[in-house]
Length: 148
Image (cartoon, rainbow, N blue to C red; front, side, top):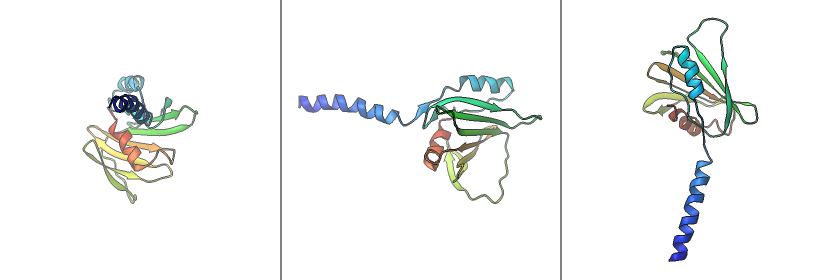
């Protein structure tokens, strides 16, 4: 019995550690502050299925209410882009699969360049993955549901 308990005490932390390695937390504080200075307060991702080394803001040369952020991976490549804009946003002739993100209706478009789209509160979100491995519907919904 003691051996079984000892094995459980060893295995449970290892299993939990293995499960937690799947997703990486993202501290969006600096990005949130930048967007707040521009007068918007959208929700932002807090978890990704890989480590994010940083982000870049795409600044339009003309005045617009569309905000875009590119998230770069540790290898330096672009992994995700996020577009935030006020609703409503109209899509025409798009092959999509309905999804729910934190109780909000949305849809997923399979890629290359898979994306998930949904409206929550004052913002419409459009998150695109540039990796086939991490751009699955399940992965994209999980990232979208991490927005805080």
